[in-house]
Length: 318
Figure 1: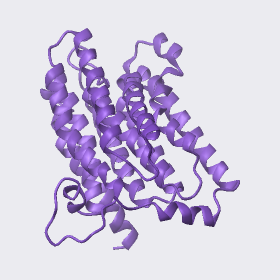
Figure 2: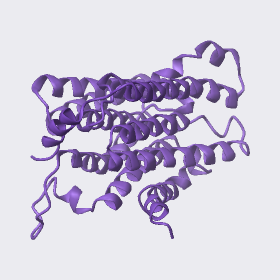
Figure 3: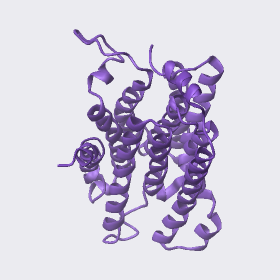
């Protein structure tokens, strides 16, 4: 088998497929009727896709190294490996948030999501640091995490299709920025989101409106996608060596706000498929525009080789 194909299968396709299989029961009845199961299962699967890709690309020890000393392990400690630890923590956190939200009145459930988003923003601002960080940058990182979680609530019933587009865009940005490892991990999340969205669309055609409420990013889905999207953007920003603008990385974490672009068309139709389309297409178009801008700016001249060397000098370390 071609080495490139084997590599893509190992770090993108297989992790995405395994995570999709884990979440598969939540796509079909009877579990599909239980909102808490669906929210927890899909959110955990998306975090799991990143984690499995991370482990395939590096090693499980890269996760364990973040919390314990491994005897005989002399590999360097790299700050961006905290992303693996975050994705691992989000798997149970998604289930916990969904259980807490289950059967709560909607206003109280919204407050639980907001509280979880604020807690995630504070924890990641304190414990997830990339090269070149400062107190101001860490505070801004926490704000971006919170803003990204809230932005995902705008995606509504197109959350899975939007996740496909957003993490696909993050994968492309990471590739443009010279960070191939991060690109394949984002690719695994994007592929998992696409598979789940496609399966949900197929399953939805065989069900009635009454038995299948649309999947929305209200709790765990918003938390997982928001935290991972914001931290991936910050990581890509910190490690970028080819001149991708920090503004584009920041915008990528907030792409789900594109769900508001065609709000008028969304409100004008009652058909579920069309409502999903209008919620998704704004995000997809913004993602394409963002990637076009990144490619154009990079083609017009990015950072010099000397600047890239300076960036590389602080890329790793404790």
